[in-house]
Amino acid sequence: MAQRRSEWSDRQEIHEVVLRYCRGIDRVDMDLVRSAYHPGAIDHHTGFTGTVEEYLAWVEPLLRARARTGGTMHVVGNHLVELHGDEAVSETYGTSVHWGEPAHSARANFTSGVRFVDHMTYRDGRWAISERWAVREWTRSDAGRFMPKEGDGPAGRRDGQDPLTLLQQSITSRKAHS
Image (cartoon, rainbow, N blue to C red):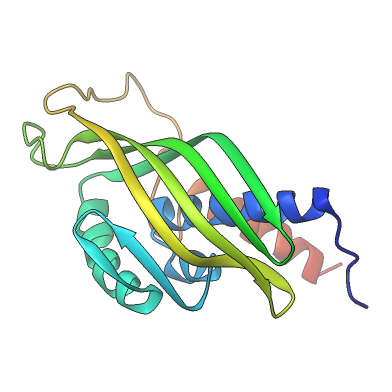
């Protein structure tokens, strides 16, 4: 049965597209990143413009290399959606934090203020990005500013051992056995 759409549900689904993209990038989950786009979508990033498949081929090796010694974290702030039927303009303000080795490298350790300007479209029963402009508003070097954790505790991972992945697997496993 088809879900009934409303302005609220459209806005919520569009917001979740943005969040799925950020989680996918930060967890190096390319299937999740891909799910934020429609097939054939176009992405414009600093240093890259092309289709979503070309973007994934470009960004995945960069993320995997970074994940060996660090990572990324995207924090979403303001999010405004202008609905126009089955099309929407979505503007998301945020910060993108990048860290890695060597610790003194500005290219490995920086924070950027970003805006995701997205042309979202509703087709095939879902909202997704048709074209994205990842606008970098500013960048600052964080070289030499990161410190080690003060003690033991949960740590983010870019593999199947991240606390998020373990929790998801635990819940789906329990549901499968009940």
